[in-house]
Length: 383
Ligand SMILES: Nc1ncnc2c1ncn2[C@@H]1O[C@H](COP(=O)(O)OP(=O)(O)OP(=O)(O)O)[C@@H](O)[C@H]1O
Ligand SMILES: [Mg+2]
Image 1: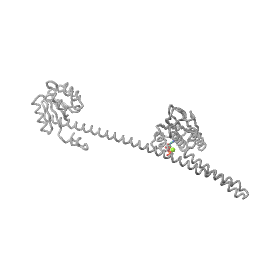
Image 2: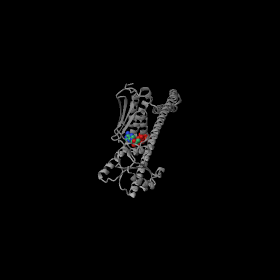
Image 3: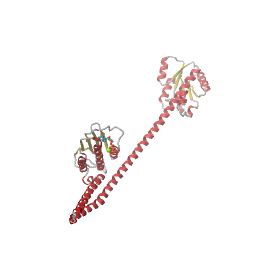
Image 4: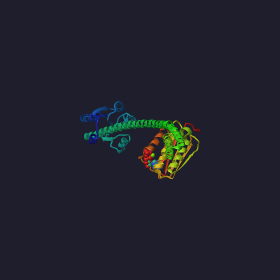
């Protein structure tokens, strides 16, 4: 046991100070004998010649071991042991019974009451010292282990709280970045549309006029004018596509359903994958940022279908379930292991966006891929 104590790191100073032992015995001779023996071995000894005094002493300052005589007038050792084990302050203090009784039944009763050991009278000094040393060390070891478990549990609690706080801050940062990103995209889309778009439209009109009036200058000039007109036309289309990709204007003007239906149509045309859209309402009342979140989630899910699924068909379904909007994007492609920790930023962004609004998301890649998102609506009514 000494070895065990020594192998434990950071042995506290308390393990080096002498243990305090309470001896309870009504026989003066026996009390004196034990007192001398234990004091001589370096222990700090307290004595009590009857049970009530012992109980008061143990309550006032719990010792590290109690040697308790079984037979005493008034309250006997068994009853005192019961009191000690019933009180929080003294419950864990090890009790060794002392008795001339050698009946197995008496020993069993002592152990049943919570005693750790039994020493028969008359005492063998070496045996008493050996047993006392063992139980003091055991008690100290147990107390230290409990303290360590408590410390580690507290450290763990603190770490868990810090982790929760960090995650919370990270989510707030993500929310901020997403919203900055959306604002930036919206403002770039607006600039493109308002500034470049207006200028290109004016240019298109002018080039159209020039094209009409340059016939007398010969076919080469007409050809050039035609090419310039076509170039301006293409640029106008490209600009519209880019600005629509940056911020789906349709979302602001016609609402989520129209914007998603349009997205589904475009996706089908561009990817060659049959894309079906259905909704059980014309519109859903979503909170601020709800519509753009829903749109971006479907957009990312469709991009993933085109990039990874090798699908032939994809279904986008919107339905109201209580005060939630349920969006499902399901493809019949190759599927994937959605539990795999190796995911890109697409799925991660999807999750973050949805969680930020108090929504839920599940991704099942076991048979094709199905992404289901549920977002809270502002009311249960249609907009
Ligand atoms: N519909 C799908 N069908 C099959 N595999 C998919 C589907 N959606 C996602 N995956 C798998 O999940 C992975 C993670 O998707 P995620 O959108 O997060 O990242 P990514 O598309 O690879 O890259 P990005 O960060 O540009 O979106 C993909 O690489 C792909 O293996
Ligand atoms: Mg992706």
